[in-house]
Amino acid sequence: MAECQRPFDECPEDLLPGYALGALDPDELDLVERHLALCARCRAAASEVRRTAELLAFLPSPHLVPARARRKLLARLRPVPSSSLTTWLRRPAWVLALAASILALLFGWQLAERDRSADQQAQQVIQADSQRRAVVQLLAQRDGLLIRLHGNGPARQAHGAIILDPSSNTALIAVEGLPRPATGQSYVVWLVRGQEYWQAGILPVDEHGHAELFLSPRESLRTFDALAITLEKSAQVSSPNGLPVALASLN
Amino acid sequence: MSETSDAELVARVRSRDQAALEVLYDRYARSVYSLALSILHDPGAAEEVTQELFLQVWQYPHLYDAARGPFGPWLLRSARNRAIDLLRRRTRERQLSWRLEVTAHATSDQNDPDDAVLQNEAAARVRQALAELDSSLRQVIELAYLGGLTQREIAQRLGMPLGTVKTRVRTALQRLAAALAGDREPWADTR
Ligand SMILES: [Zn+2]
Image (cartoon, rainbow over all chains, first blue to last red; front, side, top):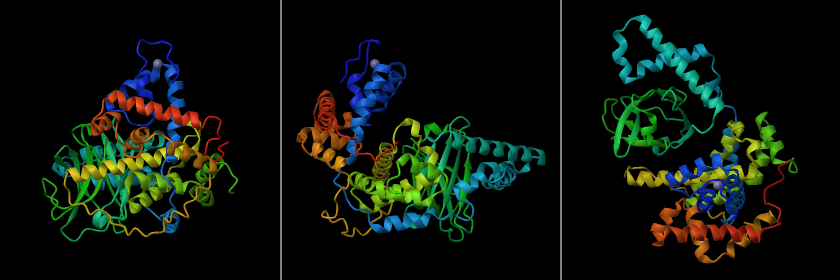
């Protein structure tokens, strides 16, 4: 390892191999990243050791990929006629506004707003729309905040994404391939912190198995560990009892 | 198109050329799958990681930024991240003791080692160099790279000082770099 020639008092060079390997604890990672932002010498050393660490991808002995994986992938490349995440993001603004107004009615905490004036409702729709656009913009500009969502159990075919926008504390969940719940059942979205669960909304599924939900929780999204979706017998549940169908880590 | 560089193929994927994605798949799927399999020890999950990764390349090709380095390392880094995420998610799910049906995909025995010839000789040399590491060095590398453990977690698990783990990680990477000095890197041409 190249010696850091003391442009700073403490070059964390003993952490660089672990950094290249992705094996640092969060506090160490934070320290290294702060340092790398300032120290060109360590940046060079880090990129050198990273080039070596990248070769570890060949550590496993090679296995043939089952041929069905290629077939399945190609089948999934066919353009989805409508409502896939990407086409959803390309919808014109008025469609977004309409969708926002429909979704707004599905938010438990927004039902309480029903008695307000039409003006205020319209205001809410505009607000929701601008939040959505902020998220869409965010997706277009940065990639780190897109979290893939995979289905489990009865929703094994489901997949989608969560787009997080920490600056406005909003999130958009978009899922496709969800089986429609039986009458009386609902997909409930939960925010998970440690062992605690907060109900974040009901995920409405259309006849094509597409579902979208816009979240704007009171508490900071950063403070939650995970987002979970369960299939519940009733929408009025305070803790998850039903079958978990998807779980995504928010860290 | 099999002689086309990765960078050119990614550019074609951006302009919705499915054949270009297929070439990238044929070039990298085996490495991606093998890596995911070593991390997850579950062929069904490794297959899923592979599919999802290439689907992401198709749907969001702009996520790869050529200015930040060649495609191969980026792709395999993403593969590892996905597999490690899934590994941790599974651990978390077990901790939450949720009734998740773990996908018990039939593990057909099509992974016959005889078929598993890595076409890329440079990659084979990398594996050879790794195989020649002392087992104590290899162990920490495997726990970190394939097990997704941090150095501190490795120290706890092996009951050794953190400093020893750090030294072993550093030594292992140095030996690997030395063994491969002057070798062409195993990534496909990315000019
Ligand atoms: Zn430094």
